[in-house]
Image (cartoon, rainbow over all chains, first blue to last red; front, side, top):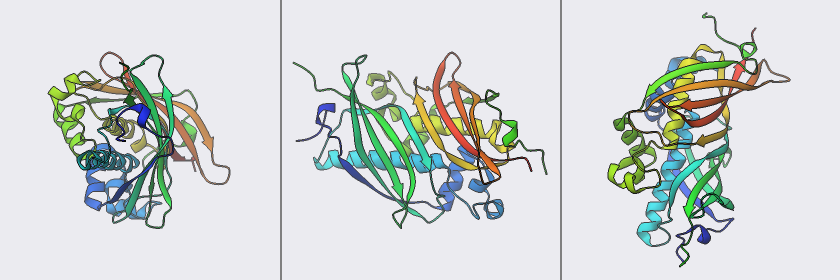
Length: 158
Length: 147
């Protein structure tokens, strides 16, 4: 069955979202706009810092999760494997953890696992889905994790 | 060296005002095209029909703009050793083109490390537009103790 509504989403479903390799240019460009700390934007200052070199903003690492999640949904929809899941709006997240520095050239693997489903009394047309989202480095070590939340449409009653 | 803020300068209850940050349509499109290419962030017509009732910034873009105000207002003036995370992010209202954001960052927790010369300071960063609160991002930078 093609998951389309909140009712179709199963707790425990895990999706590999693919990998992403961070370049120094992208790390610096993101941080110049949004997180201009010396260890994100200035290679010389970063060398002198406790990180010993440029590292990515944690918000950049998180934004790449979103990028890969959307790419995955589009691929699934195009292949007919899933969706279009009627979702896309989120009330927020919990427990964002930046556990290890992300350096230029590192390739992270992202994944997302459904961990919870909640009915919404105040919004009966929607349900809430919680997911545990992770990024791991080449050695499989956890680099970032957070709990995501998303609204998904309920199956219409007719 | 400049007189930086240290762990001791962040007692629970201290509030900092940061910003402003003007949100443009171009920047909403640019961020969304790169990181969150969904119609309600990229297409004004599709956005009108969506749950958000009009074009709005990606929630991750809201976090990034919050970080910028937080960095300019506090972190770049602080003996900061990086960010441990954000225990909560709430996207409460859509952030629209033309919104002028500001940040009220309140220290809600300050825990010294038992063994190392720094501590974890948690700020509730409340983001307002010109008329109401639109988001909350809780940030926990690692801040050096005063030598």
